[in-house]
Length: 209
Picture 1 (cartoon, rainbow, N blue to C red):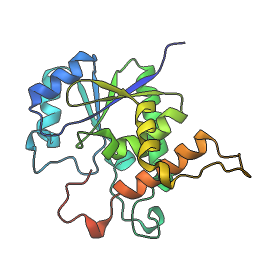
Picture 2: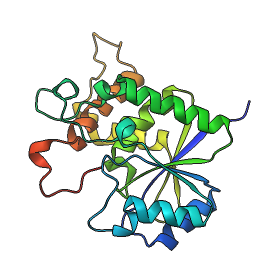
Picture 3: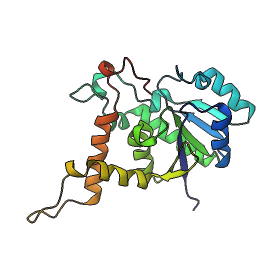
């Protein structure tokens, strides 16, 4: 059976030419924009009308999945007690799961898909902590394209999660040895969620996906 692969990328402040080169190396022919608002103050070349037009000229399909995969939510049902977006709650929504099914369909049609957001580092972006988390559970391999063109597998980012939050993770003790590495990863994802999630009260100066 052919391995299912989805890439992710952050547009950062790349010129369109730099961005296209990163896509071309991996034969990407479909860009899924996962920003809630497909516009950028700091990199206007990634405003939806401009980007979709330029991608069309190089025969790359563009689609905006803001309602399916965007990070901004103000619905109280999708927030935690601190008013931050709870990724676990978002992943349970009908729209999110419709987005996942559309990705499966796209892969089945032969598209080589990249999920695009604004953050250069996937570790700082919901495309890792919210979306890639679910893709892996769906049996999809996730590969993150970095600014320098190198690839990070999702498992490498999970290793970084463990390293960053190790002192805050549940640990086995002399009397309790039931904590697994999977338990620790799940806990670390929740901590990362807290650190990067959108909060309306904190978003005034930050360009949030």
